[in-house]
Image (tube, rainbow, N blue to C red; front, side, top):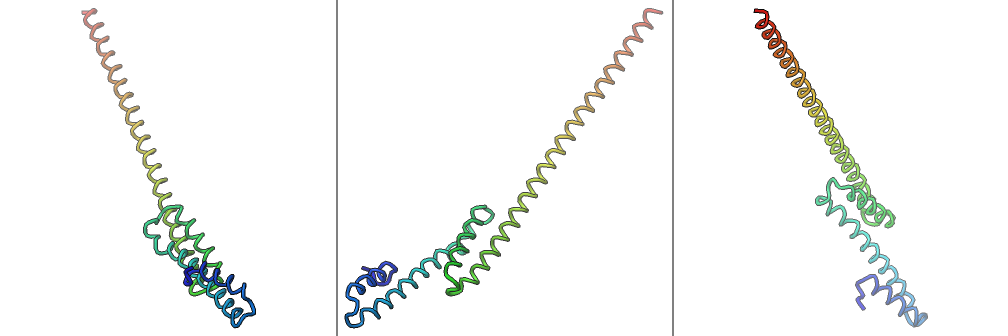
Amino acid sequence: MNLNSESGFTEAVQWFAKVSGYKDADILADECREKAEIACKERVYKSACEVLNDTHTWIGKKTDIKAHEEAIAQFQSLNGWKDSEEKILLCQKKIEEIKIQLEKERIEQEKNRVEKEEQEKNERLKRENRLKRNKKILIGTSLLIVIAIIFVIIF
């Protein structure tokens, strides 16, 4: 049994409960219960803090928002323990930054899409204009040939 862990303290509480009333067993059980609660809070706190420490590898991904929302829930479960309230604010700020980044990316993608459509439209118009110009040249050339043939026939 590892007495420095949440499960160790919980197990110790159970052992002291078995000998309740003997010497200071009840006091020790309460102390172990408190230490188990602190160990639990520390585990939750560290887990939530990992999200803040690891975000540089996730920036711009939607899963990053979900991870921060989960971290907020974990910090909220600590009811103000340590600096959990400040960490909640950091997570909320990070979520806003990610949303802004995602919106910038969406706008950039939309801009690129519009530019591509505009470019395709311009290329299509150029092709159509070339076809019209080639038709005019063909008609003009045909007309000149017909006039030349008529001129040769008449003279």
